[in-house]
Image (cartoon, rainbow, N blue to C red; front, side, top):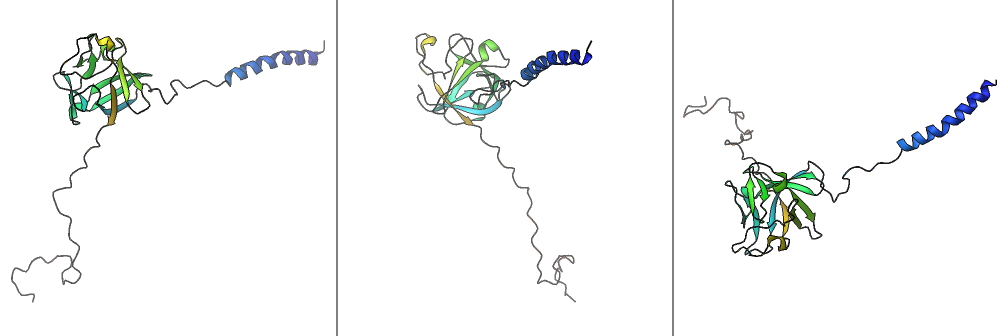
Length: 206
């Protein structure tokens, strides 16, 4: 038996299999959630949610310490919110100062909860071309909207979406300077430029 021919035949059988394995290993795989339009899991942003839709005045969403949700004309510590991505397009909203999660009841009313509930506190974030966003309850499909003075009597499911503009949080104030003055430069024209002798207290220089 010609062993050289046998080895050549076995090598010829292995080459196609190795080629298939190498080609499978070299295939490109997409990065999960690689689209810039999707929110990455674990991404955290601090924002003030501003809206001027269906409001008497311009307002920022505010979560108070007692769990009530209201609108305030000016940005405040209670209106600073932490938006964290749970999965692509789905976020949770947390009040930075009150440590309360923004949640929504089946009737559409909003409240702040100390405990996170995925059914009530997860919102779908829809990005608009003008920079505004729309938020809807992931479980209920109801739009996020600030409470009005005269709530409509119609079904919340018929409410039109309200646009919110996520405004970045204010940068921290610079630290105040220490309560002492910087030393004055030495007086080179003086006989004691480094003030080592001290005041003469009326004594003669001699």
